[in-house]
Length: 121
Image (tube, rainbow, N blue to C red):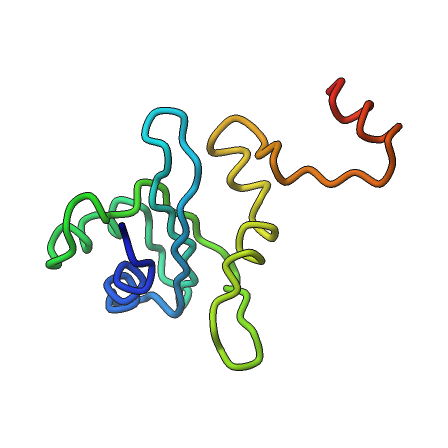
């Protein structure tokens, strides 16, 4: 089991990182992969730099993010806690592009006819 806060604390300790959210994303090969959404202070960071930072830390290898996305903001509730369900919704297009498929378990339909049309896609 991987605690997202442990990975987030490691990434937040990286110079240039303003905020970070970590979630598990379904993967056909590994079941789930650690995925990080990162807000920077404008520095030109990339996934390789994040990976190098995680490797240099005392974070165990299996906890390192396998997918990294740079986003403008992390959704938080009024008390400042990350809203992980909102992270999934807000960045669903990024996840779909990276995985090559849509998360069919999250498709919302408004009527039976829409469900049939959605199933045909």
